[in-house]
Length: 521
Image (cartoon, rainbow, N blue to C red; front, side, top):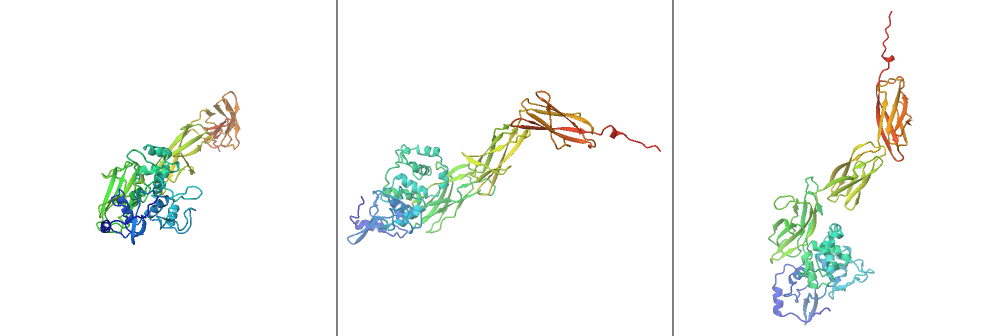
C-alpha cells in the first residue's frame, strides 16, 4: 500500500538537497526519501528531466515530496514514465482503454490519461482483455521490458528474430522459459541489445513485480539518450547507394553535456569503431551525426552481419549516461541463383531459386519478367521447358531490386537432354530438281508418329513405320527449285512429348540444266 507523506525531512537534510547542483527547473521538489538509495542517481536524472512523478503533500504548512522507490510500480505509472521519457505529445482526445478515463491520475494527483493515451497510440503499451488496461495492477519486469523495446523503433529488427533465435537468447537464463509467449520476442531482443542483463544468479525473473526504483533505473539506462541510425541496413560496397550510415543522438534536455561518444560494437558489445566529441559548455544543441562507412578502427572493412550501436554523454557532474544499444545490419547486396534439377528432358520444368542478401524489395526471373516468391528465405519460381525444346544449355538471369533502387544480378543455367533418340537423314543429297528423295528417321519404339515438312511444302508429310524403330517417307524436289541448301524438319511424337530435328538437303543443277546449246548458222 502506498505510504502517504508522514514527516518532513530535517532542516539540515533539506538544506543539503537545496545546495545540490541542479541544471534544470523541475516542476516538483526533490524527493526526500531518495537519499542514499541505490537508485538515487537514476531517479535524480529522471527528476531533472521532468520525467518522474512523486507523491507531494503539505505537512505542517510545508510542501514535501517522496518517490516511494520500494513501492510496486503500476502499469499506469510505467506508461507515464515512458511517454515522458520518449517525449510523446500528450493526447487529450480519445479513450483507448475504458478503465483509463479522462481525468485519471497517478500518485494521487498527477494527470495521467493523456500520457497513457499517447503511449497506447504509439503501441508502447497494450491492453489486457475486454479493452481494459488494468492501470492499478503492478507492472511485471517482462511487461516493462517489452514497453521499452517497443519504444526504440526497432520493429524491423524484431521481425528478423525467428523462433529458434528467440529460444536461443532466452535459454541463457535459468527461467527464460517462463517468459510469457506474447512477450518472448521483445524480451529476447532486450537481452541481445543489453537493455537487460539478468540477475547475478542467472535469472531474468520475468514475472516479478517491478519496484518504482527499479522502473526508474530501467528507463534511465535505456531511454534518456536516444541513438538513431539513418538506415536500419546499409551496404558499403562502393556503388554509391547506401554506402554510409549516419548515427545521431538526441542529447538530454536539461543537463549540461561536456563530451559524448558513439560506439559501434559486435553482438557481444565489443567495440568495433568509436568516435568522441567535446562540447565543453552548456549547450542545448545535439552533436552532429557521425557517419560510418563499415570499416573498423584500423580501416579494415567489417564483415556482413548484425552490429549494435549506442551513444553516451558525460555531464558536468562527471556522470556518464548511455543510450540503449540498437541494431544495425551491414549487408553488401548480392544474389545467387541455382536450378534444380540441372538436367531435364523436354516437357519438364526447372525449379529456379535465388538467395539474396541485403533484404531486396523484389526478385525477378529477368528473362521472363516473372516475379519470384519469397519462401523460407529463398526466392523461387518454376521454369517450364517446352516439349519441342532442343537439347543444349539454357541461361537464366535473376535480378534483385533493393529499396535504394540498387540492383544485383546472378545467372545460372540448366541443360536439356532428351533420352528419347531421333536421328534423321535425307537421300540422295545432293539431289536435282524433279528427283525423288527419301527421308528416313530412327527413333524409339515408343514413338507413335513421325512427320516431316519440306521447305517447298506447307503441309507436313507423315512417315510410315517400316520397322520398330525405322520410319520413312518419299518426296519430290519440285522442278525449277533453285540450287541451294534446304532444311527438312522431322518431328517424332510420343503421347506427352515431342522431339524435332533438322536435316539438310542440297539441291544442285540437273543434267538438262547443265547442257549448253550452240546455234550454227
